[in-house]
Image 1 (cartoon, rainbow, N blue to C red):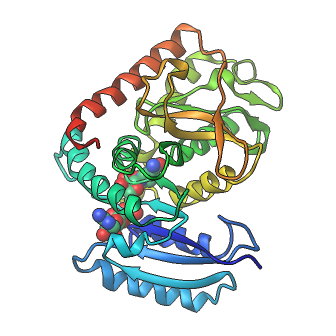
Image 2 (cartoon, rainbow, N blue to C red; image 1 turned 45 degrees about the horizontal axis):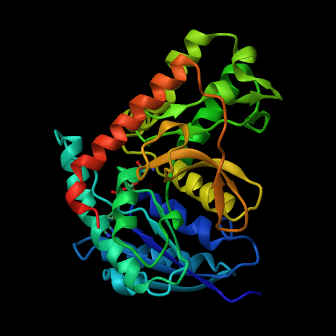
Length: 328
Ligand code: NAX
């Protein structure tokens, strides 16, 4: 057995944490032969640390063979110490009547602090994945505060959106998700995201040809994927949790699997017209475990795609302006 890797998780006592930690500890994220030490980070305010202790008791009670240790702390410096993977799930939920700009600023502060704490404490070459919303911009803030670890090691999660889009196309066409390929999310993890259906394949045929309903693809499909989070809240009374945890398992596992091509929000280098230095959902191909290249040259030259890309890019650049004073 290899020696255990240290995995830091913020917001570990939250809803997503409650699904996520058990998936990590059972080996689904890092593989069936890789022991893990979980470094769980919460806030000092009640009831977070007490609830976290309860979650740790349940992890103990699962007797996971791969779980080599559990540490709990409300101190980010301790929580990120020597971590090879930092999964930044915790953030403040958007309160009633709260503007998106206020959310950006409130949560941005968390990622200023966590970026610095990762810079000072995490393992060399650590990888960081941001889930806490607004995740693209939080990721940009954290990466900007963390000079020791390359910005390309910082990614944000749009995989839930890719998974949602795949299920919608499968349900619409009677295919299974295994039949869907090349379906990628471009841009922000927000309703402006673009699930680029024109590139997708269903059983090896272009999705628009199989669906044969452009009005559905441009309208209901994009809208359903973009607003799925709100639909889950309306139905369940709380936001997506198990599906978000599952998407994070997919995100990290595919980042470790050479050849995997999947949607990840990474630092833009200008491909597909995205402003450099924002974090945009893009198709990336894993080259070696933890390393990737952006898949460029996909044809999104049609007018609809161009409009969608421009809109999500404009939102991301606007977010960057809102948080400009938090960038290191
Ligand atoms: P919860 O409110 O259930 O849990 C969040 C936890 O984070 C709480 O336990 C809180 O105490 C903790 N926390 C807050 N600030 C912290 C800090 N500075 N350090 C450490 N812990 C901190 O939310 P949950 O449903 O688990 O969602 C977590 C985040 O994921 C939210 O920001 C949510 O918007 C975001 N999501 C992102 C998704 C994505 O696809 N990128 C989808 C799901 C989800 O909406």
